Amino acid sequence: MTAVPAPTPAPLPAESDLVRAARGLPVRRTPVWFMRQAGRSLPEYRALRAGTRMLEACQDPDLVTEITLQPVRRHGVDAAILFSDIVLPLVVAGVDIDIKPGVGPVIAQPVRTVADVAALPPLEPDRLDFLATAVRRLVAELGGTPLIGFAGAPFTLATYLIEGGPSKEHARTKAFMYAEPEAWGRLLDRLAVSAATFLTTQADAGASAVQLFDSWAGVLSAADYAERVLPHSRAVFDALGDRDLPRIHFGVGTGELLPLLGDAGADVVGVDWRVPLDEAARRVGPDRSLQGNLDPAVLLADRASVDREVRRVVAQGRAARGHVFNLGHGVLPDTDPGVLTAVVDLVHELTAT
Ligand code: 1CP
Image (cartoon, rainbow, N blue to C red; front, top):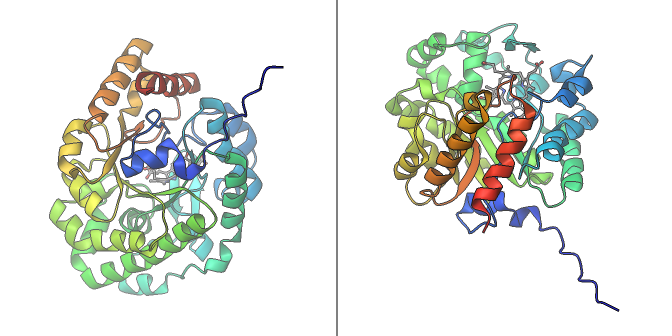
């Protein structure tokens, strides 16, 4: 009789390539996941979401679990990201927000005065049971695949509250920041507390890493970011205390802010497509890993271009302490899901040790 070798047990999420790359440890192969991998380009997502409003879906543990798992099953990505939205902590706290299809978050009564800031309701942790339930279920389903928890950073959330919805210039936000520095500080303090509550809930329910999305921070100068925003983002990371999970910090157009995003308390700095990863590695220094940075628009081009650009990102990522392959921003809705799967396979093939 031939001895059957015992099956290799699935590694724990804490030993996954995602967590190892985030800490700058050697990996089996470069881990890959995609921002907005859940709920963008997948037909199975559209089918499941049909008839349910976005913000309801985010608070239904069954839907959250299933939608979060869809891209993991389909693409074989190295991490799941919780299906949720950055405005959810505000919604749960009772702020009147709707996510309008094709638009994004829209706020019924934008924050425009000092009194509006004072009137913002706090987020009560006991209203996040649905979140803890979804995370616990996911962790059980995912086995060795890590779950990334996330929250919106105080600045990016403030842009939605002040502008009343999506915006390009964020001019009202900046005007409020300059004109009402004290109320600005209080607003960002409050947003930091609710982001921290949202993140620690996910961490305590078993998430293996967290990402703070400061998507629109790139509209600020480095000086303004450092003085008026960074301390609040740092407060979110600090609230995680000694919880042993990597912290990822991401924004778009943040080439000038990359070292500061690291200083705010990140193990991994997310980079968009504007700065090559070897240059980004120089900017963040040897103590942090990088995540990124394929231009999401490349995925709409021909396969030869996709192949060439993936190879370039992988090669430039070798300059970083550790590299988590990702896009430079979220998956575009028109992306062919088959191309995403092909990218996962190519990155794995190029980096297998
Ligand atoms: O896989 C995933 O990442 C899905 C989970 C997820 C995440 C991480 C969603 C679902 N939203 C987010 C984060 C998020 N939401 C960010 C940070 C990431 C980024 O920069 O892309 C931001 C800025 C938002 C705000 C938001 N929510 C927008 C952008 C609007 C703008 O200002 O341009 C939009 C369009 C939404 C709605 C939304 N969020 C998520 C989904 C699936 C949708 C679409 C909902 C629908 O079609 O009804």
